[in-house]
Length: 295
Image 1: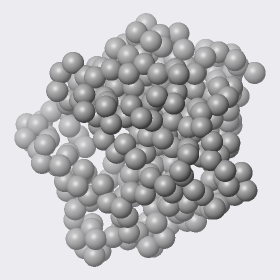
Image 2: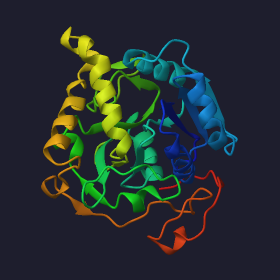
Image 3: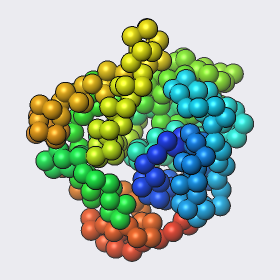
């Protein structure tokens, strides 16, 4: 079994209620170093109560105001500085990745095949009726959003393919998942491991999504209309606003391929104060422990 260190790089812009579950979930998958980039000092301070429970964290603040292109460059710099020779996961804060086959097997196969990237896709998590609930930091995310639906592809018309993990390079676009995709850093072009079925359980669709997508639409409109390709996602906010207005402020999940998924993917409990009724192993909370590779 592949036993090399496993790193994770994540940018923080808000939604700190997600951070405790995010950190423990990936600790249970064997992450040995969290490289955290916060968009402001205030965001980093808000994250510190959760981060202090994890001894292996590198945290810093962006040196310039946040923008999309700056985010990509900061991520590339972080990979080059801290994780040049390491496998590094690239989830957003609202993504909990499920790896199939298990992650250790994929990394071993990738190393043997001279591959340096893993790919996957969004699996949007929603409520049964499509409501966008207020975040509840005391409830397991899998229990709070027990259904899947095709929100990203069919509502906001966004890309669903994602780069899940890299080794020795930084993607210029996390949605570019073909061999030789554009990169911001790295001596060797990306080569993705074939034969995987990786899913990023996507916990975006709470009450925060509506305000966040509206703010995105307003912030990037001029850049998008000027033809800047980095802001291709600008129409997503407008698509969400239109959909919600047509369906009484809810996602029309009945017509978005809604399926029940009653599993909890935490393997060794939850952060303190988080409850879950989905499986016996979730009955007790736990803190960070055990940095061995998980599935």
